[in-house]
Structure formats: structure tokens, C-alpha cells
Amino acid sequence: MFDLILFKAELIICTSILMQIIFFTCFSSSKSIYMWGIESINLAILTLSLALLSIIIDLISFSVFEHFIFQSNIIKNSYNSIVQLVLITCGISCLIVSKKHCIQINLNSYEFNILYLLLLLSLLLLQSSYNLIVVYLAIEMQSFVLYLLVSFNKRNKLSIESGLQYFIIGSVTSCLLLFGFSFLYGFLGTLNIGELYLLLGNEHFESNISISGLIASIMLITGSILFKMYVAPFHSWVVDIYQNSLTNVTLILAILPSLSLISFYIPILIKLFSIYSYIWVPLVQFTAICSLLFGSLGGLFQTKIKKLIVYSSITNFGFILICLSYVDSAAAESLFYYLANYILATLGLFACFLACKITSKSEFREILYLEDLKGLRYTNNLLSLYISLFLFSLAGIPPLAGFFAKLLVLNLLYDNYNFIMLMIAIVCTVISCFYYIRVIVYMYFNKVENSRIRIEVSPFCSYVIFGCIYSLVFFFIYPEIITLGSNILSYLANN
Image 1 (tube, helix red, strand yellow):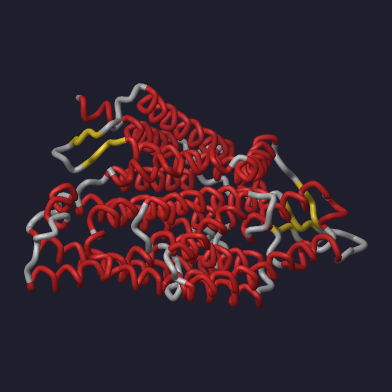
Image 2: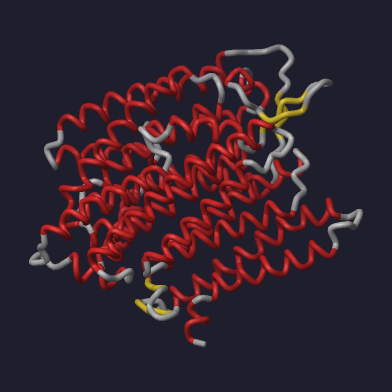
């Protein structure tokens, strides 16, 4: 019973999923299915809000220090509870900003929201996993849901094709991940992460057979995780997936999976593989350099908004990987600070784009091209300003939190005398500023006589946009607040 009490956030989501499946299956033939499809969005928001409340109660009551449940296969502590708090908050925000969009494009399917809750459930399970089998099952559950969400737009053949491509490549990556886990089990004889900490944390643990197996295992596991984070040079397939998916699915892909994987992998690298950093650090740093170069250069030639966002995300994850390659508290602080800026700016940017629609007598669609933004300033000056501020934050331009986020990463490279990566990061930052500014040029300096853009922002969506803008400005003025939070997370991840 005590195990179930600590597992209540996941149980709330599971119960809601089962109730929705039973209820909507019974009423699927009703004429009011459109109404039920819309109500399922509200039900998903309510479910995640209750799960969020349960985690907050646990944190306030200090009941989550470190508890092992379900035969030590699940761990509940302050670190993973805070990460779950952030994941659910992001999940609720994604639903809020995309609700109006779903109504406009007639996405009135309750199955979509059930799949979304399954995705959040898998993300929460991954953070609490304390056994490699549970880790693998949580990652696979997340992957299968994403395959379905990517191919959910049945009216678009390219969406189905992208979902199939994602499934094939993701399956190969999952096999490599499982192969890496099997190496760990074969050479160490355990799947429990706590026991792996004790074995690999022992500096006197040396064996030629074990070390050779560990090298292969660490390379396979790290490579698979990087692949699932959509970073270069594993990025070629993700461009089409972003472009051909529904915009609200693209928002989910841009934030939730990578955030969950990074948050889970930080304690693994710090406590499990820190002694063997000479194995995985070169791989992570090589991937970081590739992400910076491919992301900044690839975005220069894009004319489609989603593809531009893809390359922007790849560039930003290059900075995140730089932090990940240094196993110390300063690196963890920089990483959490950068993640906070990336999440706020990306969420706010998507909220603005989802509010824009192209309307005419012959078509009604979401904005797809940069040219669709022409003259947005004359249609809605405030929304143009918000988009500009979010782009400035991603570019690292003051007075927004993105400036300090990139400054901390550059300072980390300088302190570690890595001047080659420092120069690459600076040059790529300058290059990426060009395509961010290009979007602003389209909005402010290209006037059209008959603008086809229609802006519809729901009240709750406007609250999310304003909250993101306010947070980015506030964290620039008072960076010590988010730095304190980053230090707390860094401390909890190390202990």
C-alpha cells in the first residue's frame, strides 16, 4: 500500500486513461463524438493537474527523500520528483497552447489525448526507473507513442511516411540500447542501477574483460540516447518528421522527449559512468560540435518554419551537450539554466505560431513558410514583438535569459581551457543569429497589402505566452534565482 501511495501521480494518469478508453469506446457511435473529443482535451488537462498537485504535496510534505518501491525497481526522491513536476507542467502548457489549434483543424479525436497521457506516463516512469529493464520499457513506451503521434495526420501521406521512417530508425536504436544494457548485465551480473553504482563507483574495480565490455556498453548506451535526442550527426531523419507532423506534435517532439532523456541521463553520467569519462566524453563533445555546425549552417537555407525550428533545436542541444560533457557542478548548473531558457523560448514561440492561421476563400491552414509571416507586424504588432523576443532569447541576445544561458556555457568552456570548442560555439552563435533575424525581417520589413494572416489566441494561451516572456525577462534581471534552482538540481543529481 505504501508503494502505491508514492506512485499516486502515475496511478492518477493510468486511471484516467482506462476511464477514457471505456467511456469513449461506449459513446464512439454517438453524434456528439466531436464534443467528446474536445472535452477529452479538458479531461487530459485535469488529469495532469491532479498528478501535478500530488507531486507538489509530496515535495512540500518532505515525503520524497529517497524511497525504493516495487522491489527496488522504482525510486522516488527529490530529484526525479522535481523533474516530473517540470515535465507535467510542460505537458499541461503544451495542451493549453494547442487546444484552439486542435479545434480549428478538426482534430477532435479522443485517441490523440489518450496517447498524449500515455506519453506523459512513460516520461514519468523513466524518471523513477531504478532497473535497466524498467528503463528500457519506459523508453520503448515513449517511442511507440511518438511513432503514433507523428503519423496521426491520416490525411497527409507524408505524415504516415514520416511515422514509418521514425519507427524503423527508432527500432534499430532501441536494439542498440538493449544491446548496451545486455553488455552491462553480462559483465556485471545485475540490472539494478543502485548496485551498478556500487560496482562502477569502485576505483579498484578492474578487469580486462569487464573494461572491454564496459567500453562497448557505454558507447552503445550513450550513442542510443544521443540518437533519441535528435542531435547531429543523427539528425537527418528528424527534419522530415518535424515538417510532416502536426504542429502540436512538433511542439511535443521539440520539448518533452529530449528533456526527459537528459534529466534521466545526468545522474547516470555523474554517478555511474563518471570514472569512465574518457570513454563517453569524446563522443558527446564530437556530437556537440556536429550539432553546432549542422544546426547553425543548416538553418541558413530554410524557407519553412518547422525546418528552421528543427535546426534551431539542434544548435541549442549542441550547447546542452557541451554542458553534459563536463562532470561537475558548474556544468550541471549551466545545463539546467540552458534547458530552462530553451523550454520557455520554444514553448512561447510555438504558442505564437499556433495562434497564426492563413485564411482566404480557397484555403485555411497553419503558417508553413517564412513568407507567410510577411507583414505580421501590421496585423498584430504585439504578437510580432513576442515572437521577436523568443527568437532573441534562443539567439542569446539580452535582455533575456538566453544571454546568460549561452554566457554560462561559453564561460564553462573557457574555464576548462577548451578554446577550440569555445571558438566554434561563438562562431555558430553568430551564424544562427542570422536566421533568427531573418524571421524578424519578414515580420517587420515586408509589408503586404492584403494580409491573409488571422490571429486567434485563447485566454489561457495568452497567459502561457505572457508567462514565458515574463520568465525570460525576469531570469535575466535576477539570474541568481534560476541559478539557485540549478544548483539545487545539480546537488540532488549528485546525491
